[in-house]
Length: 355
Ligand SMILES: *[C@@H]1O[C@H](CO)[C@@H](O)[C@H](O)[C@H]1NC(C)=O
Ligand SMILES: *[C@@H]1O[C@H](CO)[C@@H](O)[C@H](O)[C@H]1NC(C)=O
Image 1 (cartoon, helix red, strand yellow):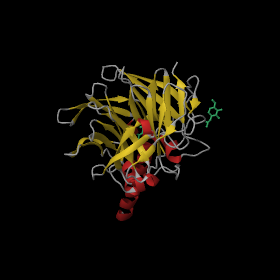
Image 2: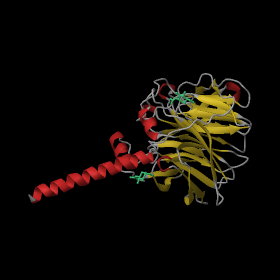
Image 3: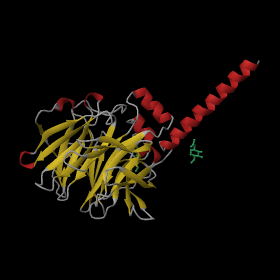
């Protein structure tokens, strides 16, 4: 009798634990959230973008870089085509142009993810840093952008044991960057367990040729990362906790936590508007739909803007939302002179008027 009772109690406890875990996961993924349409005027899909525009970054004079063709382990819907980098000149109505990749680089296995641009102040040369997942690995590529040739010249591949699940990067020097790891484990089963147990084991890594180290930890699912216009603060989207973490950059490049701002959505990449310092976030309004990626019940899209993030009263606004009938799985949004460019994980990209 005694043993049977203990076994029953254990089974009951396990059932409670499992249902509590799934309930937490439903909350974390905002699984029950219904989306109302909040469209912008004069939206047009970008020609030629069919396999995603997971990350986008725009330079001061309106040149946008677009990373397309993400192959993300665990994401059911992605193309077998090699990834590509496109440029687009804003605010003109031109179509995106695919950049040629030159140098000693395997384009067949190219699987670009987060991107960041660094401009060398001394000679004006432009470097594009790209998170790449060839054969499910995780590494960072540095390219030089050669405008006259419409090309990217491969400079260097960076691999390191601390760069094990890189999602996004922000370049802070010719060979220096901060990177987010969106999981602790690299094994797919353990990744799932990590999510089910809500382990806060993700981190931010600082890379320089001299030293590589973890500079912030304790994150549930570190995703997009970007820097303030004055280069004093880093912003990290902790996707599953629906928050942006604000970190102060110390002299030795380590980071100290300043605060967290709730954004109410599963936000992916962060773009920072240089004039205002506003954050623009491409977000997943319903995480379960992203995981399932059912074409008949597609994940929607949402763009969130955060103003005055460093003040006592940041303003969080939904700028755009769609139920998936126009745009599926928005992962990035960036404004330029009255236009808003929105990219997605594996589908299309949209350009709209902001007013
Ligand atoms: C999930 O969210 C609901 C409503 O906000 C709350 O009542 C419930 O306690 C949450 N469950 C867990 C396990 O966090
Ligand atoms: C999205 O909403 C529109 C109405 O604005 C509706 O016609 C359409 O069926 C909805 N699509 C999905 C995928 O829910």
